[in-house]
Image (cartoon, one colour):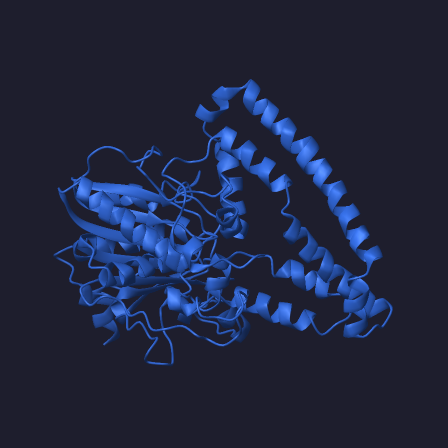
Length: 448
């Protein structure tokens, strides 16, 4: 995948209008017109591997052979075949449909198509932006009922920020009405808003965009009294990045933000991304697999940022290569002192049975230590009080935001019962195999 410059990553070209059916068709029409340099790059990698592996040619001989007239003619012929099928057949066909049915520009995407596009953006959303492809998702706020937020809001605002390859619709399912529904029932004059964004972009780029969006929100709605941020997985890192740049840029919304809740967020990286990088590095040592290595490298910058939980521009912008290295090159991004932060971790471990493998796996993607912001280096330890942490045993990364016990824990944190002080609870609240266990003061006294 081509590298992205900070300019492309910091500023999103698209407005706040979600893609229509016409945008979808035009986007795929553009994808079928493969840029020549991108196709030639892939063909070059494949040819280099085949010539060096099968014919045992030296690097210099491979380079000389690749610059011969015969090889150039072959590459040009392959490109022409793909270009004609895409540029002269499929792309024109899609655009003819758009001309015949102009009302497609007013039709929104179906929920299934929205979900598919969210996944596609998670994998290649930065590439879409680089190519100015309309498949790139804009950053949009939706209300609790799934409509784009346009009306006046005030009081206490809760912003939900989804994770990688997900969307604003992924905070509830057929079995669980959602954390937002639970919070709405707690008091009057509060509002749930749901962010949708391109998860393929750099986390720091999305953090800057979220900061600007929240600034615009309070400028249009001066009656907003406070803001709470709730992020799942990558969404928690985007929230942290927004807070970092909100403070740096002296944004007004920053001072109205009171709480941050992160659910399964890889504050110190996701094990799966580091595994993918090690796989990519290992593949380079075996014959005939550099082609596969090239394919493994086709993942978005947003995914790459999950390796160590990068939330700042200077975590990545000075790297000599897009893919970076296994070294943790992050800069510290401490939480603002006035923010009450609450971190939730899931794990496939059993509470009473320790298993080293499951401890490393955590919730399949994020370890408990990473989700709780714990790090052996004091510069990176996020220093969350134990009473602001919760470990849910038996919940994986993909269902932790749908468990009613998670909603209950968040409700207790954000809307505490004045008759039940925080110190009356265990330092770490747990869910074991889906059964909620929250020890009260009486149980603690009985243990004493």
